[in-house]
Structures are given as C-alpha cells and as structure tokens.
Length: 424
Image (tube, rainbow, N blue to C red):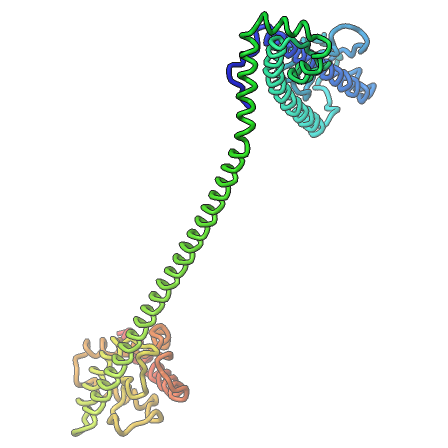
C-alpha cells in the first residue's frame, strides 16, 4: 500500500543499512576463504600420505613438513580448483627443486583425475549455492533497509522510539497510532504541548490516516472488480479454446475431404487405365486373328510360307509381351512349311525346321540368307524369350509347356546352321 506525502528514508538510515551490508559481505567472504584454505590443507596432507617412501625419495619436489610456515599450505596444486571470484588471490610459492641423481622421469600420479573432477564439481556446486544465497541476502537487505528507513522517519515524526531486532536491518516496533493511544494516560500534558507546538505535523498525519482509511474503504470495490475481471478472462479463455477446437475439427474435416477426393481421382484414373489396356488388348487379339485368317485362304507354297514367316517374325520381334498383351501358340512365327491351319505343336521338330531353311535357301541371295538365319537364331534364343517376359504373356499353363518345348526345338535346330554359316 502506498501512502502519499510520506518522505523516503533519510541518508543516515541508508548509510547504516549499506554499512551493515558491507560488514555481512566481508564476514561471508572471510569465512569462505578460511574454508577453502582448510580444504587445500587437507588435500595436500592426503596427497603426501599416499606416497610411498621410495617414490618420495625419487620425487623432484622437496617434501617439507606441513607445520612449517613456509607457505606450502597455500600453494595451488594440480587438480585443485580456484577459490572463486570472491576469494582473495592465493599466494604462490615456488618449491625448491631437487633432482635424484641417476634417475629421470616425472612424478607418478597419486590422485585419479576422476576424484579431482568430482571435488571440483562439488566445490563449484557449493559456490553456486552460496552465490544464490548471497544474492537473496542482498535483495532482502535492500528491502529491509528501505522499510527500516521509512518506519524510522515515521517514528521520528510520531515521536515514538524504535526497537531493532538483533542481527537484522529491519526494525520491529509497535504501531505508532496504537502506541500513542496507549501512552495517553501517562503523557497527556506532553502530547498536548506537542500538538500545540506543531499543528502542521498533526495535519499531515491526519491527512495520511484519512487517505489510508479511504483506501481501506475502497478495498471491497477493488475485490469485486478483480473477481469480475477474472470471471471475464476465464470466459474469454473458454471461448478461445472452443473456437480453436472448432478450427481444428474443421481443418481435420477439410483434410479428410481432400484425401477422399484424391483417392476417388486415383480410382477413376486406374479404372480408365485398365479400360484402355483392355481395349488395346482386344484390338491386338482382333488384329492377330485377322492376320492368321489371311494366311488360311489360297494355295500354300514355299514362297507364301517364307513371306508369312518374315511378316510374322517382324511383328513378333517388335511386340511387347505381358499379362495385358497375351500370346498364343499360333502368334509365334514357327519356321515350318506347313499351312497355319494344318499343323500342331507335334509338327514342330528338328527335321521340319531344317527342311524349311533348306527349301527357302534358293529363294534369296547367300548374304541375305545368312542374315535371315542370324535373325532367326536370335528370335528363338531362350535367354531372349526370358528377357522379353514371354512366359508371363501365356495365360494357359499347358499351352506354355507346348510353346517351351517347340521353342527349344527351334533353337537347337537353327544353332548348327547358324554356326556353319558363321565359319564361312
């Protein structure tokens, strides 16, 4: 609560509070310095006691008695952390170095780095804790000094005596107005004199009391306004959360609709693609059937057998096989002289294939015949059929076996002829 027209703490009060604070800080600093010094002494004693006699003789450092005031207790050793920013600088003392004759080497480690690191972590944690305590103490001292100076000034105006709590900068006194009322019976004459002598101070005190009373009277209104404000804020928070939840649901619903639209579009595209593939396959089957029927009419001769093999061979070499483009036994250009409507899979053997190539040899030039045999050899090679996935295009398993037997027979019959022409 703020009281108007009340002067702040005087310079003397602030000065006393600052002096008390400096003394407290100095005391803590001295105490911390003594603790660090004792820690270093214990650490040095433990290190000296762990050394063996032989190692002590070969050491490069002269081991002196810890009781001697030579400054050895204050010397920093390896692995001992610093004293902190609030500690005075630790004096450093150079040890006299003595070297053992005939031996070289550095001192053996007697303390593990892990233990040194652990001690340093503990010391650092303690320093941080003391630092936080120090900051809290400074803040409390500043707070107490401010209130102490304020109440001291009020007591000087009211004419009351102050009582200090030992060890603290805060002052604890009884209320000035209640104290004045309790002393009315004892100092009636002196109080009347004071009121007569200083009416200006009495008016100032009365005005302060009046303002404090008005503030206390307005407290219920403040509480009511605060409750209304909190109620309004809670309602606004609930409204905000409800709107956020609605937005989230709308976003989820919108994403779901988009996903459903995408899935429907993908299904539509897949159906169109399947339909196109089915139409294409149907067209291919119709075209093949039409080509086969073209060779079934008319007189069958060697020239027509050669012509049929060439045309169907080119179509067979450029065809793409697969489940969408099936193939049958009669779609393959078998090198035989039989009419297409009069031979079966049993008619395709070694002798029939050799007879076909011997018969058509006289209908073309030697170089053309050689190229004709090379193309036929590549056409019926088993590895080429596997690479072109021909077996996946045969829907009937029994027909697939027939085609495999006939294809091997054709390949075996053409290979010797191809080798003979290649050697020439």
